[in-house]
Length: 222
Ligand code: DX5
Ligand code: ZN
Image (cartoon, rainbow, N blue to C red; front, side, top):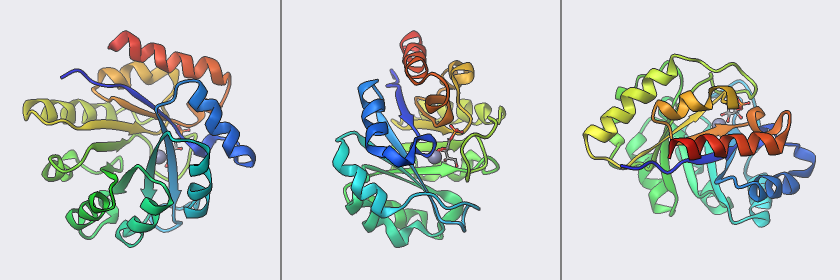
């Protein structure tokens, strides 16, 4: 199956004093998703943005909001994030007591469900849910902070997961998040990842050049 490549700039690396402008910038340069990192200071040792911010930036764009919930027991807040404007909701397998019920809730709220795996979680964990989720997010850093170093061994997880998806005739996106830059994006794509999250890789340095660089890598692999 032909993969549809998508670039999901992470707002975590944007300038929070003018988020509306930052979103327009990525939209004008052809971003596909807006990746929004929600952290609770419990599942991860950091606190980022939450519901009121999502609600207010929802007014700036119709772009797909790819909401990455790094929170303990996300079941408690699925309705709230859906109502705030999430299009896709990603939960962490490690943070959920009942993954099935949480996926059900996301679907019921009209959002696209995805499951994320932290670097040390095996892909076996996600296999039972592959017929129910739109996407699997493989973390290529330990969740909690932007600007960390890419963990190379996660590429093997992507290769194995893409093989399983293909062998079983499934249609599931693989997203990778953490430390992705122009310098390693080609290898990420070659490993079978089709949704690339990049925070500092987009916003640090020459923004326009970064955006164009990612798009070029997608074109070369299409
Ligand atoms: C980390 C977040 C990432 C982060 C990526 O926990 O999930 O989305 O913003 O930032 P970079 O691309 O700078 O590693
Ligand atoms: Zn993220």
